[in-house]
Length: 76
Image 1 (tube, rainbow, N blue to C red):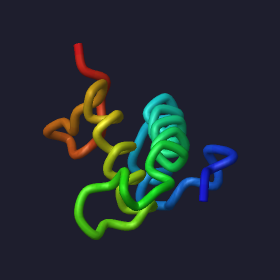
Image 2: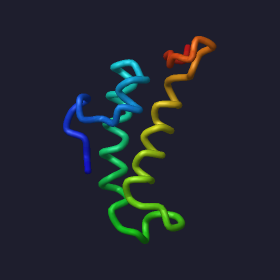
Image 3: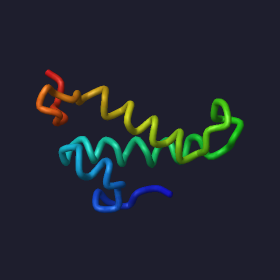
Image 4: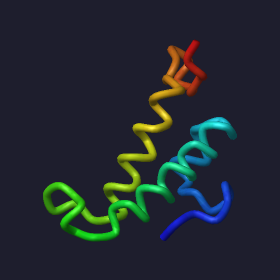
């Protein structure tokens, strides 16, 4: 289920990540959703949705990190 807007993202993303990181998450999730459509393209028994969420979080973590204040900040 690709996300059409930032508002449609899960609360665990919307309530934690800054706007730009949410955009990264949405774009990566939607791309992975398309890329891992076929079960043969995924590792193990993970669902298409599980894989897409993992890819999306990995994309966010490439550019953002959780600070000591428990908030996500852009890496320098």
